[in-house]
Length: 408
Ligand SMILES: [Zn+2]
Image 1 (cartoon, helix red, strand yellow):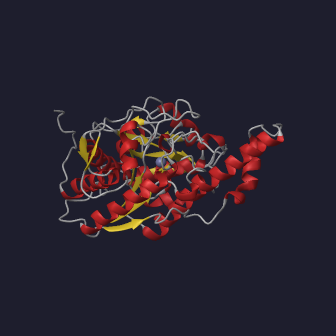
Image 2 (cartoon, rainbow, N blue to C red; image 1 turned 180 degrees about the vertical axis):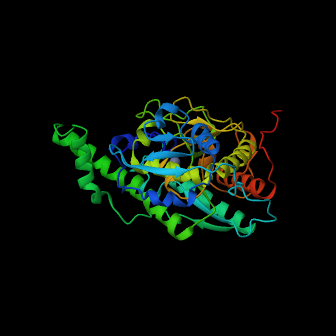
Image 3 (tube, rainbow, N blue to C red; image 1 turned 120 degrees about the vertical axis):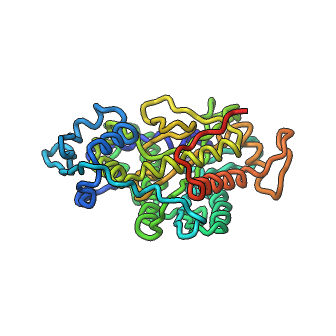
């Protein structure tokens, strides 16, 4: 069975707006978790982070956040006149998220999150394609290979590395059938109950599967990250892909590029959900955007140098350009919202481009091989080494501003 690819960065995820009040399988947030940040930020710092990273379009936050002279009021529950009162401090306190220059990566806890599940789940996840009689390309298997290579490099540099997933198996113990009730409710909520049995059955199946492999899976990973691993940084490893022009006739595209994501750019419909509004404020107060941007910039420069690929640019309102380094964007994704620590989300290569596919097909190998007349190390090695290089730069050679090298 063929699946149309919507790999686009785990990207076109509109679930936020589909649910009233909270996102799927979410419970109401505990606003008291914000208490330690009373008088931690100045009004300027709060406003700047809100307008430059988290919610660049002012009218979107205005119904939920009221900024006053000495503090901000944040609406706790949609439709209710209950507010969380946050007080500002008068003078800025020193930022602690960036850390100081290190001699090695010793003591640094880095979680590597191989995107998706892969293996026998890759078709269900729509992270799978086959060209002709070639072997199937599965994003979840490639991301795991990169994670293992990267683990070896970072561990050799002294970092404590954790793989959020070590096999092509789900982290969640749930199965698609566990979401039968939610899928039925979703159909009813969208006014689709009148559909023919067969059509409705297909939609319900897809919905159950999505709630399993995406929502439940990422929640299970978040629990592992937040309660067990408790890392200083999570690196989410993905490969991007283009939508097929014709899903029936899969043709490799010419477009091949890279980009790196930090958390931010919450949309109006997302802010209207109590849990997403809370997570946004929680991230803002922790100041994680500062480290996220710096790591993303260093990794972006390293990916550009190693791959020679151009940076991807978003056009829609769901992403925001962050800083001056090309290829670094803010988006609100489930993983980079739920992992309670700084997160960078990597999307190098378009797996179904001519350039990347040739290299994926070649698999992993020692040394270099001629691909398109150019000696190249394997794609998995190149990806892992570039990320390690970016992290080394970030932690071992901190510079005040990351800039792209001049183009030759
Ligand atoms: Zn992905």
